[in-house]
Length: 240
Image (cartoon, one colour):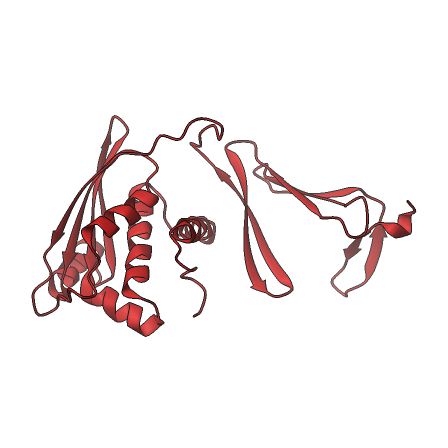
C-alpha cells in the first residue's frame, strides 16, 4: 500500500494554511492527564479510531452531533465505577410517592402512575436509596423554591438530599405537577416524557451530580440522554 492510499494528518493554522504531518496518530492531552488519541486507518475507507485515557477513573468519550458534518467530543473521567464484567446487581429503591396536588390543579389523565415514577427513578439509580416523591401544586412549589433556593416562583423539580448511611442515599424529590404539564405542552412533549426526564434529573442530583459549570452540565446531560434513550424517550435537549 502506498502513502497515497492512506489518509494524512495536517496542521491548520489561523489563516487556514495546511501543513502535512508524517504521523500514524495524533494525541491530545489535557493538563489533568486526560488524553484522546486519533489513529489513522490502514486504508482510505477504514474506520478512524479514537481512544480516551485518564489517569484516574474510567475514561468516557461523550459525543453530540452539532450538524450533519460536525461532531462535538468531550473526554470525561467517571469515578466510582465497577468492573464491567461483574454481575449486575440492581440498586434497591425504597420509594414513597405522595400526591399533594390540590384538586383544582390535579389532572388525573396526565399525572403519571406511581409505578411509572418508580420505574423512571430506578433507571437512574446507581446505589441503594430511600427516596420520597411529593407531587405538589404551584403554591407549595413556590413556597419551597422561595424558602430553600431564594427564588420566588414554582419550579418543575426540587431535590433535597438528607444523608447517606452505609451506602444508602436518603432524600426527597418535590415535583410541581402543573408546572410540568405547562412546560411539556409549551415544549411539544408528552407530559409522561417530560415527567420522566425530571425524575431522572432529580435522581442524578440525589447522587451528587450537578450542572454548575459546563463540564458538569455536559456530563449530567449526557447521562440523562443515555438513561432516557433506554426508556425509549427522545433526547430532551434537542429541539422538537
